[in-house]
Amino acid sequence: PEHIRNIAIAAHVDHGKTTLSDNLLAGAGMISEDTAGEQLAMDTKEDEQERGITIDAANVSMTHEYEDTNHLINLIDTPGHVDFGGDVTRAMRAVDGALVVVDAVEGAMPQTETVLRQALREGVKPTLFINKVDRLISELQEGPQEMQERLMSVIADVNELIRGMAENMDDIPEDWTVSVEDGTVGFGSALYKWGVSMPSMQRTGMDFGDIMELEQNDKRQELHERTPLSDVVLDMVCEHFPNPVDAQPRRVPRIWRGDPDTELAEGMQLVDEDGDVVFMVTDISMDPHAGEIATGRVFSGTLEKGQELYVSGTAGKNRIQSVGLFMGSEREEVDRVPAGNIASVTGLRDAIAGSTVSSVEMTPFESIEHISEPVITKSVEAQNMDDLPKLIETLQQVAKEDPTIQIEINEDTGEHLISGQGELHLEVITQRIRDNQGIPVITGEPIVVFREQPQESSREVEGQSPNRHNKFYITVEPMDQEIVDAIQLGEVSMDMPELERREALQEAGMDKDTSQNVEDIHRTNILIDDTKGIQHLNETMELVLEGLQEALDDGPLAAEPVQGS
Image (cartoon, rainbow, N blue to C red; front, side, top):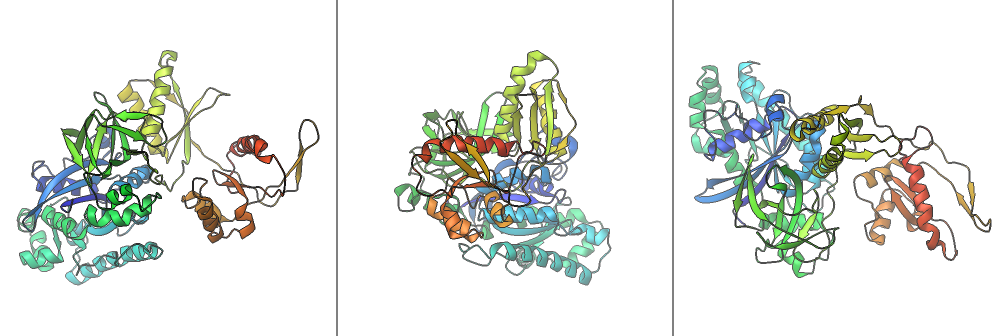
């Protein structure tokens, strides 16, 4: 495990992640050097190639020799488009390092900030690659001085983002900001396949003056031969990203709330391949031949064909039918995958993205928190009634593969509603239902999802039991935004131990007495039980909660869900 690196490439849309991945694959001898940069090998689906964007995160494993030792690099190429941000969040759970790519001309963009936040929230270490440096020379005709200033300002922007996000993280041992001197920043052009960093300049003797000269004289091939991008980036990955043995002791307490003194916890901290199997599923994909494939990180133990494993939240065991590694679109079957790697397995029919799969029953990992909620909804109907059962099955499958999609079947109108992160997100999903499943569907106009919220405290409302002997009094009031944010970010939930939840609510600004009486949290609404000394209330509480949840899901103004009350 000391020679494994699990990394994700993340960036704003169109800053060059997939082109960079091509270079790394070519450097590892997995695709032809001539077509690298245009082949976009990690965009494995037809619609990704057509649209020229990455839609699904794709995995590949490659080897790289660094300081005379062969390293295994498990890489995930993630989408940059904001609609597919869920894939980035899930990929971050499986990796220990994030290579953030920034366009030299555009600089750090909104999605750059989002992917950095997603990485740091999961305890993933960032490094920076500034791409498209050739544009500064050929398009903007910048001199060495201007160019240096521009690159330094990009680095400063990224560091400011990292500093702002990392200041509340107590478990980061060292300073995670990036710097040219340390070798955690690389520059280059993924399209023309050259790259440099401080260590590579010292090794090859190339400096920015040489690069500008070769670039201006169109000697890009020579530039690529003298300082190939893949060597620079893969050396940076091997040197600066933590291996699983360094990373897991820090990451496991961050994403797992179980007892740290058990053998199981020790096995995860030590990346023990002989320990109990612990596998966290971060992605589910469909293969027409093999069925459902679950991809994720092996934290301890060794995955082998035929193992019977527990899946958190479901009864009974699932049997692994095959174990493999993803190589872009191809899946290579192997006999076993030891701890510290990213593996893909078939046969886990009960698993969803975020499931904990293990050989012994254990506390599951923290759920993967998606920052964004669905914002757009479309109705989907089958053109032919015969396709209806297949459509429902496909929609359930879609929701399983992509947790940022919400599927709702409205019983009153019989509509199937599909909600996602944006119009493109829904368009891609419906196109895939049509093309891959062969179901002709009609979709309605996209509508924006609304939420309702009380604006001030209500009067007290009285409710009577059928025998008129018992009365309930309920009031509704808006909740502080800080508490709503804490619930949305997963810092407060009913799954937490009560003491922890109380402290988290008090930190977000709730007073001590109120935080002790929290009865239920539904979406971002909290029910406070202010009754004193009443017997048998818990027997009817379930019914009260049921009524409340129904009212909150279907708000009084526009029948939209209520939040923040």
